[in-house]
Length: 479
Image 1 (cartoon, rainbow, N blue to C red):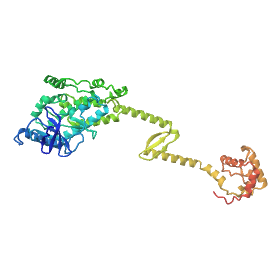
Image 2 (cartoon, rainbow, N blue to C red):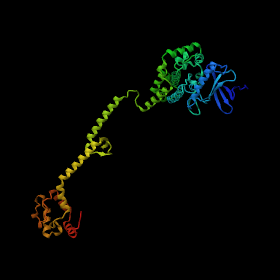
Image 3 (cartoon, one colour):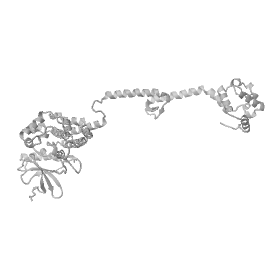
Image 4 (cartoon, rainbow, N blue to C red):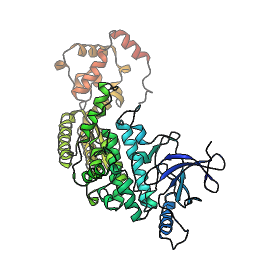
């Protein structure tokens, strides 16, 4: 059984997780159940003094890294500690251990060679969130690649790992990249040892390209110097291959035809973002992770809120539709005007229901219509007053004793019956033509006569009607 050596006091080495030219990652354990990941940097520090340039650079970069965890982020690994190993004097960074596979593992068998659209968008959102978080505190990662992004099986989040290059000086970084870096994910400027915020944006674009197409745009055939130089040159000069052609080629055979067709519908806004991330010149990319995240959020929201397949939707279309609706509204107003209006409320613009449609009438116009309606009603009342007075007097007022049917004698009643039997043209309305002078007053018009005659004609038994009237005392009736 091999001896477990101590990285530093209180931190045990549980074995290597990954080794490489840019440093090795070990599984560490503090005394107790806490498991961590320890990144050992390849450049030794001989003296822990500010006089040592390597130590000074390391300390400066570690201070920057501490800012990353001042505000926790679910998509950025927690940096727990840093220091110098007891043996070999190598600087190390101790980080949270993430339990789960990295993207490189998830793209290998038995997993599918490409991601589904849903999972690509999820990862794009979370990785952009991680970059935005780091760039807000001026920390550049510099080594974003498939095996530095892990899927946390306990939280379901994708987490950005390994800030090793961030803790190196420019000279150390340049040497490390040229001989041991993941050249397939590196921006053109990194070949010269330069690193900007846009450098991380470029690597972000490479990762999304790989998830969509199943491979990086410029794969590394072997780790020889010639192959590395060819990939490096391609990043600087060659056009990026069509990622959708690669996706079509790498569609899993196990998927149904329906799923294959659906998974080829990668959103245009996502492809545009990937294309901008992979611009050769840094100034043509998103300036940093903050701008990248904003573009992702706004593009996805605009796609959800719009039914258009492109950006051709503009104000002219809206104006034409508005004109069409106004014409339709005018048509319904004219067609339904005979049905009247139903007022809903009296706001500044009053909604009015016309048939099955609602129109809006301004308050001044609405009040004017009401005033006109009231005026017409009053005018009609004045014109019809004379007619209504005659009818009222006939039906309800018994001002002359001669009109009381109870005082009529037998000959008078007989005369009334004869009048009822005659045609209207033969009935005299003059007071002298009726018995005892009790005829219909001259001010009552023919309409009143018709009403009175109609009431009398409704009696099918004249004798019963007369008897009932004689027995009833109508002198005290009031209306």
